[in-house]
Structure formats: structure tokens, C-alpha cells
Image 1 (cartoon, helix red, strand yellow):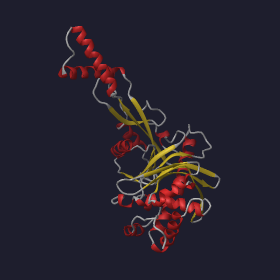
Image 2 (cartoon, chains in turn blue, purple):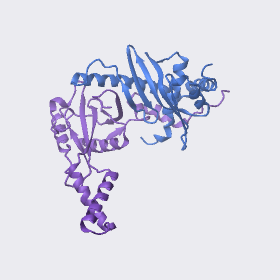
Image 3 (cartoon, helix red, strand yellow):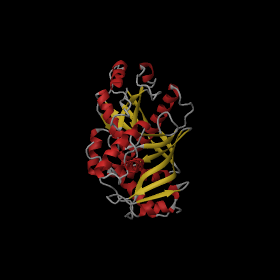
Image 4 (cartoon, one colour):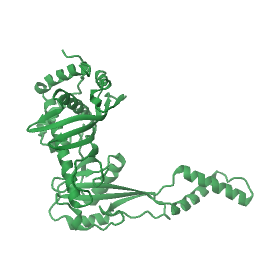
Length: 169
Length: 207
């Protein structure tokens, strides 16, 4: 789609918002009648915008709680890639999400069947459908909120206040 | 990394919807664009084409096993590369040059002769080498048009898109930050509204 580069900031803002929302809501985010558990795990990559793309990589059990990650936000970086654990009911998916392409990688699926036959493949496809619907649902909710000043303004101010406070505050 | 292995990595695309009773026609299209082995006596270094999802050495697709109950058409692209690594080739050419000089009782071959020797050695090594095989899986939901390519390599994606479009005579569009919005119900009016927004700066102090 023409102009995709112009909107590449949406992905980084989405992941940064996800971190903010998860933190202020005790790790849960609701969209419509769905509620998701969201955790940032293992690795968090933050990057500045522009051609230089300075990056910070935080590797820790809970990288979003590291002061180093919050410091990166304070110098203007946003989340470029994250390893997320998404809980949907009893099911838990862990995966990497890239802000630029929205590509899901290294996803561990809560499969119950083997993958050697058609039923196992169908199960994996169904789980990917669920994961994708959840990620897309969160992203679309963010974009809708982001595109209207009336809904975005208060969130933006709250995010700025959040960024300016230390991680353990 | 594929659909049938432990962890999953993929890129998303969308294709035009598929008409009813497509299997026989698509089986023929897959056969016409099947994988064909690289001839080690030839000069081609890279080849790609479709193989069976469950057998990398078989190109004939069984219509029964082509589509899952969920409507996913399973595809597998085999990409072979038969290329002698530059350092290996250089080492063998050096050896061949020394052997020839010793045999003929003269100095090492000059630049032009070394180039000819390089071609000769490369041909010999190709016949002795096995191609590097890469298998890439994809699943195409024939109901809603979503195609998942189980690779995040840009090079593989380019090859896949080109081969898919030639095989099925359908355009494949990458699904990224903007393309996903209408697929998940955002209206064109809502999407057009994004033109008014710019990147935010969160590191400013709240007023």
C-alpha cells in the first residue's frame, strides 16, 4: 500500500502502548468483549526513529520492568521488537512481534496434537488464526483510538507521564 | 520454523479469492511450476519450484492431500543452490595450478590460464557436490485469501511471491501495518483519517 513507510511509526507506537497498557492494568488488556493477558518476556528492542535508528536491546526475564528500558523511552526510543506472552483463556502463546512488519516469529503454540498429520496441521492453523485475531484486534483498537484526538489525547498525556517516571515508582 | 515444525515464523499475504472446484486446475498449475533438479553438468546455480508438502522429492501433487479441512491449501517451495563456496574453489584452483606447473615443469599459470583452470575446477567440483536444499512451507486459506509464508526472509519472500503469482495467475499482496486494517474491519474513511496523524513523542513532559 502506498505510503506504508509514512506510517511505520504506528507499529512502534502500538508496541509501546501495549507495554504501557499492560503495566497500568496489571498485565491485562481488554478489547471489546475479549480480555488478553500480556507479558513482555526475555527480550525488548527499542529504537529511535529516523535514519540513524539507534537501538537498545534489553534482555531480562521481565525486560519491560528494567530501568534500562524505561531510560530508552526517555531518550525518545520506542519498542521495535518484543517477545510477548499472550494469554487467551487457558491458552498461552509466546512469540516475537516486529513493529515494522507486524510479522510474528518464533511463536510457540499451545498445541495438543502432533504435527505429522492433517488434524495436527489444522490445529496449528487454528491456533495461528486465534493468535493473529488477538494481535490484530489489539492493533486495530490502538489505531482507532490513536486516530482520534479525543480518545488519543488523554492516553498520550498518561504515556508521557509514565515515560517520565522511573520503572520502580 | 515452518507450519509443521516446533516454533512458527511467518509473513502474511493476501490473494484473490479462489473459485469452487479449483483443485484439479491448481494441481496442474503446481505441476507446471514444479521443482526440477539442478543439472550438475550445467551452469545453473539456483533452482526453485513446488514439491509435495510431505515429500521434498516428489512434485506430483495429490488433490486429496492438497487442502486441509479448514480450507488451507498447503504449499511447499523447494529452493536448491549448487554453488561452490568461493574459499573452497580458490583452494582447489590453487592446488590445480600448482599440480599443473609441477607436471609441466614451468611457472604457475598466468591470469588468463588461471581463469580457464577455475572454470574447469568449478565444473569438476559441481559434479561432486550436493546442492543446499531449502524447504519453505506456505498455507493459503482459499476461503478468505490469506496466505502465510513460513519464512521471514525477504529473499525467500520475493522468490515465493514471484513463483506463486506465475503459478496461480493471482496477485499476492503483503499484509503489513496498513494492509491489515481493512481486513479487520476498518472502513476506508477511518483509514483515510490516519493521513492527519504524525509520529508521537512520548518523552516530552506532560503539560
